[in-house]
Image (cartoon, rainbow, N blue to C red):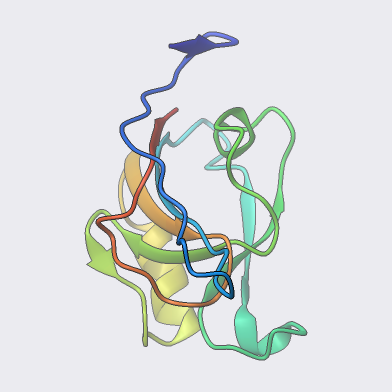
Length: 125
């Protein structure tokens, strides 16, 4: 499937059936553009969530992150290129993302709770 010239590949999309847990975990594949990925990151401890982790603070319109149509402020980045960021200090996690090369595969959660990477949706940007 193609969205505005961006190839989008969807494999699976699962949401937890538990009534109390509406979190979603998905995978996004990004190609770094000339100005980067186009998203600002923030340490979850510095947000109202008060939860450690690497979170999306904002997404730049027109950027690779925005063209995916999935990444939103408040989403937590759980892993980059198969390397878990869970439990990692924010500066280390941020550096892993910055130094991950031009093609990144991010495992992302819509909330700060942890879920299995088996329940995923892949979006290729």
